[in-house]
Length: 165
Image (tube, rainbow, N blue to C red; front, side, top):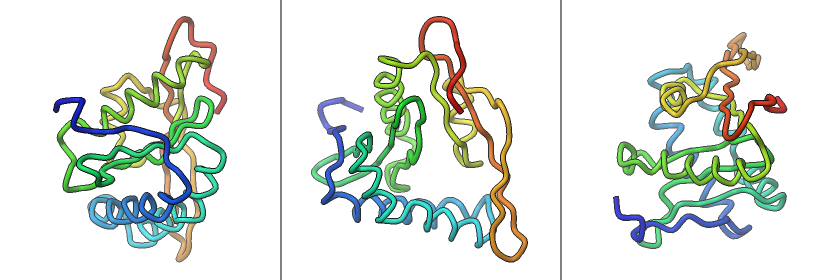
């Protein structure tokens, strides 16, 4: 993948709907292989346009564009990495790794470690990148459904003083 064919840059408020649509499209296509419908719907609500807009206003939301079209996104706030998604049509080409490389490099400027909350589809990617599970958490949803997810951490530089989880 030639680097000059993609553009990774901070998202602007006008991109909130586009990013939310990419996340929802990805979640609705990939997550049903791993999760019940209540969980799929909860992820879509969690990453809706209002939430994306709030994060853009705080700073740290990025988009990955190729040929003028948004193909991926990721968010970094402090040492927390979140909302890393690549459009299903562009998965398996290294774009998720590119997004993570950029987010981790930004975090490493001021943090010794990064942490994230991992969905089942992404756990192996994060493990291969050097993240380790430090604990599990629960998110109760409707109809008695509970999402159990991993909190993962990775040392970025120097001695790991622990991520602020």
